Length: 366
Image 1 (cartoon, rainbow, N blue to C red):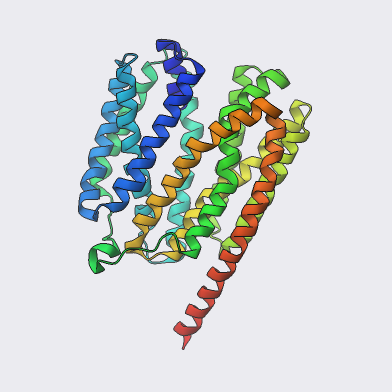
Image 2: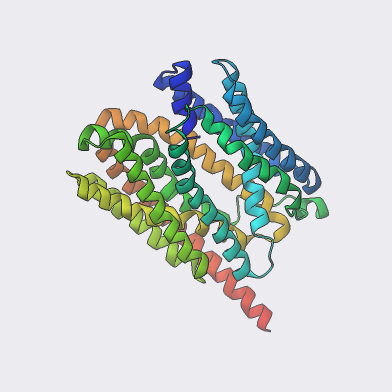
């Protein structure tokens, strides 16, 4: 998805507005397939659709290679729809173990793989682009997607509670789910702005070259990767303690970027933000894993991933206007009060969740 904006601009002469619409369109389609399709299907149909979605991703890579100005929209729609089916089911499958420590270690390894792809993907692509035009990058990743398609039938799909009992899963009232949402909002909102606009800021205000900007992103993702390595090994018993740390470091990182007048301080801010980027997502899905039984997690994970897509639609639009009005660094500062509000909203949810855990533990002991 980081290559597609460059691809459509270079080959089809898309304007920045066109690229923004395409990105929003992609996130919207993923949001719809996750929130309104995947969350409502029984496990048997989801399994078949998951396999089909992996095939569609592979086919889309090849079709994008031969696309034109019009057809690229259709192929992005197909790829985005497939992504909305694949991602929440991978989260659910990673958390099938009934042992909490094993389950959260597996989810930590899953998020570790995501971080590794953020480092390895652009690195491999940069080597390929030294020898081939940009569109050949899509053919490079087609075999990787083909391997995913071959392995997809091996995925485990637990039966949803609603299939057994006929009762709906109360996702939105669940304290663990709300804690996960407040947690992911504290980082995903500023991170969406960093991905879309920090490179422009670094070039225009700090005089960095495009390659140096990519190196800065690599630094961010490397710190994120190392944070997830630690988290996948040391499974936290108290999630709220780590969520508080993540919120605090996000605020400190944003404040450091606001204060940065030179490259050094800006780089320090990026390094600081790499830690919560690594921690927030696995902590959020762990909160969901601890709050829903195995049969209910598909719906919770589907809604959770849908909200992430919604953030990717809304935040860049709002941020673009704010940055145009007050500037990039000033917008980073304006995010800090939002994080404080989310902290205040998350705190009582964490207290209730901990109280329920203590009550359940006492009942089990009796």
